[in-house]
Amino acid sequence: SNITKITHSNLCIITGPFSLNGISLRRINPRYVIPTGHKINIDKMELTNLDDGYFLFLKKIQKKQNLYNRTRIISSHYLRQISIDKEILELLKNKYFFSYYLKTSTLFFPRNHIFQKIQN
Image 1 (spheres, rainbow, N blue to C red):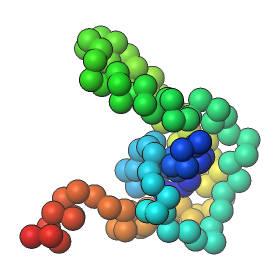
Image 2: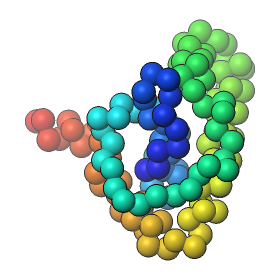
Image 3: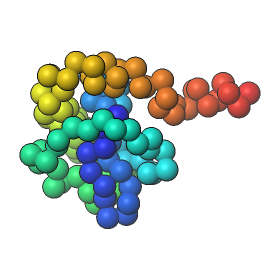
């Protein structure tokens, strides 16, 4: 996954892109990040709306709003995910091996069902 931004609360905002490895736009703790030497220049991307308030708003909306407002806001989040992924995929177009690396790196991404199998 790619770190797109670090928020004021020092959480990392990452994305897969979702079409490559199924990792959606989300916040994670930096202790779960494994640094590598690979880098993508994402300075030209518009990421000003992605901050702690945005993700707290999404969490609050899922609990309190009615179905119409919830689906409208979740669909706007989905469209934001698509636009960010499209820009990252455009940057990865010339880097074939890096996109292949992102496809295979999902083996190391923590998923709940994997941890449940290991713990049992």
